[in-house]
Length: 121
Image (cartoon, rainbow, N blue to C red):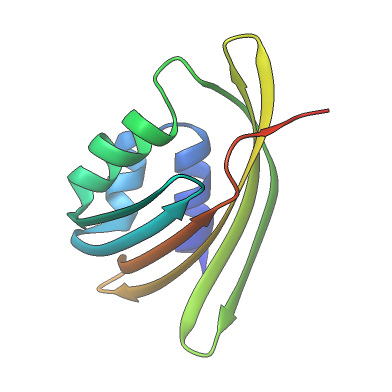
């Protein structure tokens, strides 16, 4: 289950190399954010084109990984995390639920559900 934690911590650090190190080069990726469904088949596309370009802009400041929880559902692994993010002058919370399978010590199948940017009160 440490791959899930590694994924969440690399994401919170916006660490492209760290994210790619836990993903299989060819990964079955699907995700749902409040406004869109996302699909990709390559780790580079997931990290460079989706996660670090559209989900978390280069100017977004991920201030903290506030919650991290790992478990498994049968043979499938799960990681849930919540991050505090500053976009421009506004503060948000973003929570994601992630389910994944591992092959050869890397994430090969990945599904993410995102709550979206929720204003921090």
